[in-house]
Length: 119
Image 1 (spheres, rainbow, N blue to C red):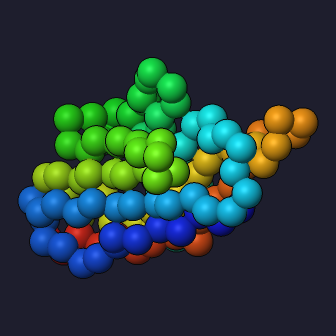
Image 2 (image 1 turned 90 degrees about the vertical axis):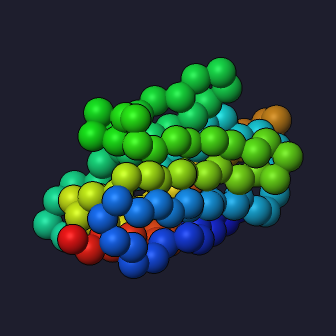
């Protein structure tokens, strides 16, 4: 299984970006998918996550970011509006996926995509 993120870019403060993360490979079931971010010298932190019927957002993105999921395409999106310089980070996709009904969920991470917000 692979997670591939796209959509990172350089944008001015107040602008918008949409990140995508597509899961591919042998997939039986995807439990939850989410986005994390990390800046140098700091721990990776949760931005937003979605599972069946619920979503969870970090306080610092509530009202600005929206996570959504396309179960047919095995893809999760992060719509980021009203971006601030402090949103600058590498954004990582995360998912818990099983490859057969016999196995438990495995934790997968994407390679990361850089988001830079200029002031």
